[in-house]
Length: 411
Image (cartoon, rainbow, N blue to C red; front, side, top):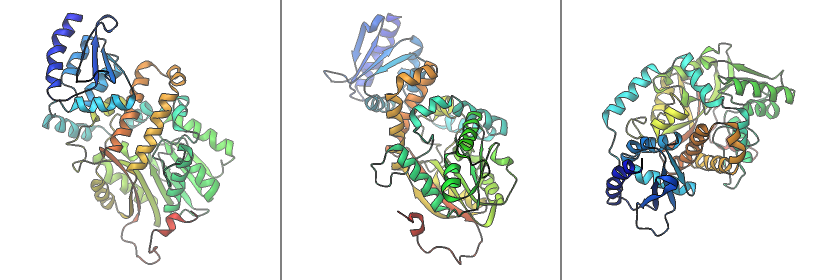
């Protein structure tokens, strides 16, 4: 194996050196006996160890997706500070050739045929039904798998998640006795807060069996069975309208670009004419909905979120209007999600010894690189996240608030 690797890696390394200066040691062979440095550094910060010749095509034309694949499949090992490892991966990806039109065409084909009730259910279960114990190690006490809200910037993760939920419930002007639907309710944190502290009657739907089971347990433990109904149900099958309020937090990324207008249209059908809805979700910063930017998209689609698709905020607002809703307030929380994902990644690293027995090595590698990569992507404007407060379109303007002051009541 050593001679094969050396024959391929030496000319590649020479070519890389002409393009970038990296603090990287590349090693192969028995116990890393052979090595070379990819930059002018006395002490490289990152070491990439090639374990299998199958890594060669993934390294020689490196992209974030191919490098992630090589790591996840155990073809390479990477040692060094996580932040440095990510920086190196992005610098190496700069040396690859652009993917061009064939990839964009395949993306459109996947969109067209990739979202049925069955396929969406399978995708959700793949991602969320790892184990509740796994997620509990790094999500925080409330088990909230979405962007926190750092009002001052120095809050703990748990405090930021509680503030995020209150921020949403204040925005939708939730009142005691009102009927709330939470689409993609996760482990139940939002509906628990809405029932306990806002006096709402809540319905939460999820496609994850694990989330459903734990959310129901948490509702029973809180003694709120009379106020909260947790369902294992597709949002498209919710028919017991009307609802005074609807929330969707970290869910519409699974809907699919070609299904956004029907998604918002169904929300409109379920909502009272004077109701309010909140869509909180990740967006692409590419105006063509991710067609021209490939910052790890193949990797995420293959290993993390099958069939997940991120629209640009412009697409969100257009589809929302086409679905019969009026956007009333739009807030960018990109810096908040950078902070959230960084805290998740830090917790994942800190709890590695407890996490590894819960999953196999491959899945541990997937989530490790995914969480750290998300923090980088949000920090560098590769992806963003918006809260869009909306209401049924075509309604009179009388009685609407004149400012955003109500969103911050009691703070």
